[in-house]
Length: 209
Image 1 (cartoon, rainbow, N blue to C red):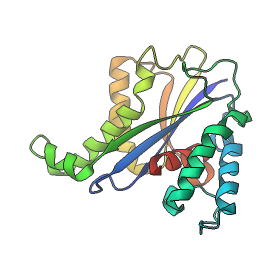
Image 2 (cartoon, rainbow, N blue to C red; image 1 turned 90 degrees about the vertical axis):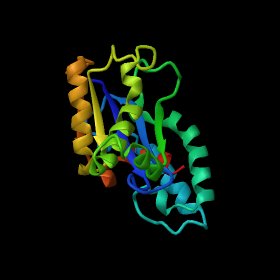
Image 3 (tube, rainbow, N blue to C red; image 1 turned 45 degrees about the vertical axis):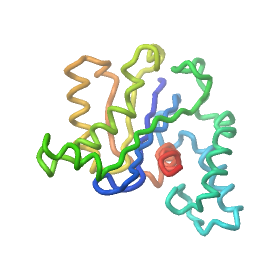
Image 4 (cartoon, rainbow, N blue to C red; image 1 turned 30 degrees about the vertical axis):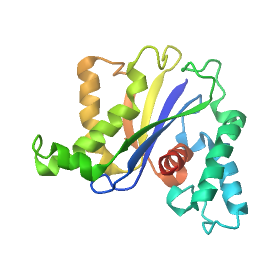
């Protein structure tokens, strides 16, 4: 069975930061356990960080907030190269036109400005949820454009969220998918432990970059 994984993580605070970023890390794999997907890529990036004298982070998890900005630039540059050596994403045919095994989508906003702009349109306590729903629909937009992602060889789409705070926005998006009959039977949202899910850690790096 072939699974399209979309691992989602964020940088900043979705209610108050001037730059709030959500990133989706996309990869296709025949492995059913997301903790065993893009593991080699994550390990290579960790090795790079550990070798950098500017880095103070020695954990087993990639965290953009703990990486020196210049080191982060080097990590992203290296990521572009090492993704082609990732064996867990080896499949017969890529679902997207670009010949890359791992892809990323981004949502960027100024949270304070956005909430201020929509405060007359929604209830005050709903402003932050509007941002997160918008983030999810932006990140997942390629799923619903016929020229972006071809799901013909894909058995399922698993969208992995890094925290339970995403469940309510995800439910709203799922309901919209169900109503529109957009491959709803193959798409499911679930939470994951970012410490043990390499794809979510790559999304974190992308968000902070």
